[in-house]
Amino acid sequence: MVYEATTSAPVNIACIKYWGKRDTKLILPTNSSLSVTLDQDHLRSTTTSRADPSFEAGDKLWLNGKEDVIKEGGRLWVCIKEMRAWRKELEEKDSTGPPLSSWPLRIASYNNFPTAAGLASSASGLACLVASLSKLYALPQTPSQLSLIARQGSGSACRSLFGGFVAWREGSDPSGIDSLAEEVAPRDHWPEMHALICVVSDAKKGTSSTSGMQRTVETSSLLKNRLEVVPGRMGAISKAIQEKDFESFARITMIDSNSFHAVCLDTSPPIFYLNDVSRAIIALVEELNRASGKVIAAYTFDAGPNAVIYALEENMPVIIGAVNRFFPTNEEFEDPFKTQTKDLPE
Ligand code: 2P0
Image 1 (tube, rainbow, N blue to C red):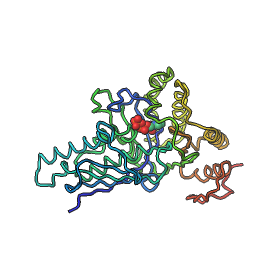
Image 2: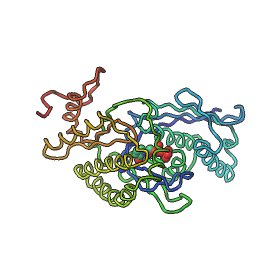
Image 3: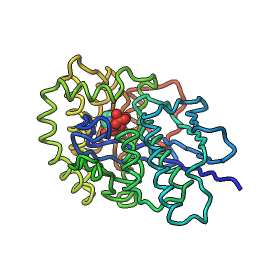
């Protein structure tokens, strides 16, 4: 009998950004955040976990075929330890199943996109690790409960345990028990919403999110203002999602992305994630919105120069056409919308 489970978890892209921890050990954020989880068939991690008593003692993990050390007390170690503890609880209640919690683990994880390029690979990767162990161990925990563990692997990972529109509530309990992810609306609530990923660079980023955000907490006075305005944005964007009000969704998304990059710049030494191409994409989207007479596209940037443009399906041909016209690439781009030149605005 083989005890093995494979799961996939998609990337999530935040509209209200997480940036700063009030507890670095438990990964408790300084503000709530909200994201859209991309569809499974695009950017995702896939993880297989196997428990076997014949394995040499100790757990092992490979990321994209390369072994990653599971450091005692480190994030991976904590996630595995917590998941094992839940399995042990189950075995103590019902001892008829295999004693999986006492067997060594072998875990292999793959991303189908560049790792650590500001494309949220840690989010999908850690969410996927937790989901795969939950499946292997046949745990009864809900996705919100699992998000408590994924959060300790990487903050943004807690949001990738749900599809659709997801909030990570900052919580207030020092134990972290209420700092969890929950669904704001499922994917099928607003199927017209699409995300266009513009890979400006797939190089590994310069300043890691983990160190960058703590530098911001320690040095940025602008962060105080951000923490005052984010709760209002959380409420307003949740309402926009419920009401499928794209214009409000887009305005809040763009403002919050700019606010996040402003606090990065206000950090000492400053953190620059955007480059000239990123800024040109901002200008293009602003101009498209102006020329359209309404907001049809929203840009957002994470800890790297790559842009994500949210738009409703009906407007994607125009947006893809404009991006291709102003940022031509040598690579053949498979346009799912089969954009016609006549769709482009003058
Ligand atoms: C987000 N980012 O909300 C924000 C926007 C980057 C910019 O969450 O230290 O990799 O592992 O908790 O989750 C990136 O931070 O940091 C992130 P840790 P994480 O998506």
